[in-house]
Image (cartoon, rainbow, N blue to C red; front, side, top):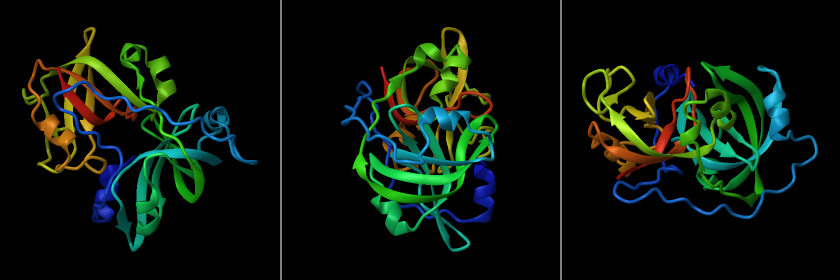
Amino acid sequence: MNKFVKAMIASLTVVSMVGCSNNTTAETSTPEATAAPDVKSEGVMTYDEYVAAAVDSEVIVETYVQAKQSWWEDNGVGKATLYTQDQDGAYFIYDLPISEEDYNKLEEGTKIKVTGYKAEWSGEVEIIDGTYEILDGNWIAEPLDVTDLLADEEELIKHQNEKVTFTGMTVEASDNGEAFTYNWDGSGTQGDDVYFNVSKDGNTYSFLVESYLCDSESDVYKAAESLEVGDTIDMEGYLYWYEGVNPHITSISVK
């Protein structure tokens, strides 16, 4: 997802967002999954078929909204980026043209059908240039604990874009010596993405609070700003990928 290009071509209009769990002092809560999703409609891909599809090919999926980035306008066209999932895997829907009215209908668990094109950007697989239908049905995924998979990228990437948890990780210093930076290189200010490093079993990873998903008023954003080097934390978020694992975090618990 080329956020920097998007920021250059349009101004961001923030509205209500799904997915920013706010927990800074207690253990990360895990919501129960609802009833199993429906069988796919005729002509709709299974997740395995989606994975096997070539980049740039047309894909058709039925999936369930788990979270959404803020709605914005690009030359008068409303757009939003969605984190979605079914019982078999996740689909990152990037810059979907959508009216603000329909965007507001997309609550956690809402079922949608998306027709678009499979794309890949720096390791992140996504659906672009999409159209959508809002369908009957509701399902919320239960987060998967992938902490033990962090050192096994081949297995970890199989869960790309899924709702996940990380437990017992240690906050490490960023390049500036602090516990976090605004933007990946420290070039930002409050309101931009918050990046922080965490380690497990001797390996260090870059995580972030994506400001389009959880803005500076959210508790998780403030929790990231309050981190201290050496803190042990549990987290929940979405297994985004950028030249390696780069999760978008929606909940932080300091232990």
